[in-house]
Amino acid sequence: MIKKKIYDVVIIGSGPGGLAAAVAAKKEGAEDVLVIERDTELGGILLQCIHNGFGLEIFNEDLPGPSYAQRYIDEAHELGVESMLDTIVLEVTPGRKLFASSTKHGFVEIDARAIVLAMGCRERTRAMIQIPGMRPAGVYTAGTAQRFTNIEGKMPGERVVILGSGDIGLIMARRLTFEGAKVERVLEILPYLSGLTRNYVQCLQDFDIPLQFEHTVKFIHGKDRVEAVEIAQVDKNWNYVKGSEETIPCDTLLLSVGLIPENELSRQAGVRIDPITGGPYVDESRETNVPGIFAAGNVVHVYDLADWVTLAGYDAGKSAAKFAMALKAKESAHIPVKAGNNVHHVVPHTINKQNLTNDEIELQLRVVRPIEERVMIEVHDGENRIARKAARYARPGEMLTLVLKERHFADVEKADSLTVDVNPR
Amino acid sequence: MVEKRKLICVSCPVGCELEVTLDGNEIVEVEGNTCKLGIDYAEQELFDPRRMVASTVKVKNGYHPLVPVYTEKPVPKPKIFDVLAELRKVEIEAPVSVNDVVIENVLDTGINVIASRDMPKV
Ligand SMILES: Cc1cc2nc3c(=O)[nH]c(=O)nc-3n(C[C@H](O)[C@H](O)[C@H](O)COP(=O)(O)OP(=O)(O)OC[C@H]3O[C@@H](n4cnc5c(N)ncnc54)[C@H](O)[C@@H]3O)c2cc1C
Ligand code: SF4
Image 1 (cartoon, rainbow over the protein chains, first blue to last red):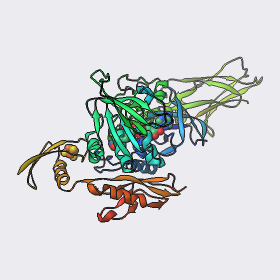
Image 2: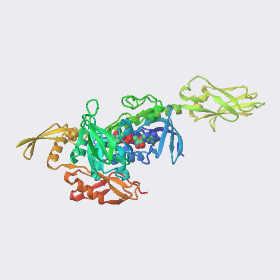
Image 3: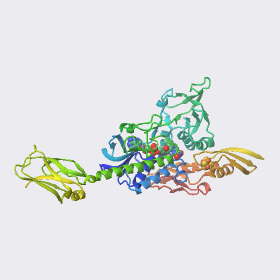
Image 4: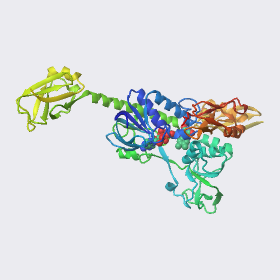
């Protein structure tokens, strides 16, 4: 079971965006901050990005992804951020309720004063770009191959063709070369590189891996396992250029053909999505159109640098903490009025401390059972009696009232809650 | 003899295209750099090219079968595959802490290979 049912800030996703949001929310003064992550560890995509290139903007150091993540994981722990791992958020409501499921905690329902969406993005797949051909094993997204190679210690294949010149594809070209695979070719349908130039230099040029622009995969061959891919040049309208076909024998095809922000949860919560970025519309505080729901990182738009994701996460976490604290102040300004002994209900349900000026406050209530003798209606805060009033009898069919006057207000102000009892005298 | 060489600075993600004017073994001018790191890069790249190497080593009793590692500093480019071969020989024992030295002074380069993350024991 979970420890607390209501958190100040709940963050979905523990990549650089989510971790930065958690750290910033704590530093801004939020007390109960929870990160929910579906993986069994904190860190997000960074854990599989074992190459250097992270942290240049923020730390002025050239760190691998896991080291970069480790700094924020450690900081989050030091600040007392709570986390729930191996837990997937299934639904977020516009009223900031979350439903999640995990092996350890079962089905959980959590209320949040503010939420930060930091679910990152996912890779486009073969089905999304519709590559013709057979359906053998050996066709992976570059990120999947990266997870196999860098975390699970399994090589995706030995002779590799990579479609797409995005950063993940370029980085995997080098990585698989390091592990003894032969990367035959990198193909890009556009006339220019889609990843960073430095990755072209360090990942392809350094190892003489050929890159062809305006080329794509026309057909995937292979019965059980990929045996070859047929590639072709394309013209400006992406039609194959006749006679440009070439067959490259290989056992693996990696796809590095783009990322899409992961926003199923956002949509359910009523968050408006920009059709151009595929992520939520946000204002400068990173708040979405749904009050109290913020978003940062690749879930908003795809970043090329984790450092910038971190900075966006800071903004979102800080804003979420401010929102949560304003809400909390409002909540604590309201003193609940509870139905006590033999009382069915009391209206109003709460009293706003800020309104305790000169107006009288009338409490209206009904009893549970009739009492056919003189009764006492009593308002107390536990130990301390605040107001009382006598009545000739009490019947469920007849509403009773008690008026709190200015002379009671000092006591009301000090109370955590008020309870109304109706007892025989 | 004066010659011009084109390089791409990889010191940061900006990736400036540098044009270096060389007179024999001496750099006369570097153009195209956005910051002064670009000049250092040109010098390094032309006379002693180096790269950071990041890979994995096997770990016993760890939460994962591998732990990611990297060279603390860039190593000479021609030694990249030798460093990788050294890493393949290594198997360490969990628990591992971030920045633990996995290979000291790898191949006499004066550079340590260190762990990129904590790896708890299971
Ligand atoms: C392969 C690859 C290589 C990269 N290389 C570099 C590089 O060299 N240098 C650089 O600066 N940047 C690099 N980047 C970019 C950088 O890593 C990303 O921009 C960054 O990780 C995005 O951070 P994020 O927090 O938005 O998302 P992520 O890191 O993707 O984290 C999102 C997290 O949310 C979790 N999640 C999603 N949905 C749910 C749910 N419903 N319930 C619970 N948890 C959920 C996911 O499991 C994940 O852990 C690379 C990115 C990739 C993919
Ligand atoms: S010259 Fe400076 S700004 Fe340009 S790529 Fe090199 S380090 Fe980056």
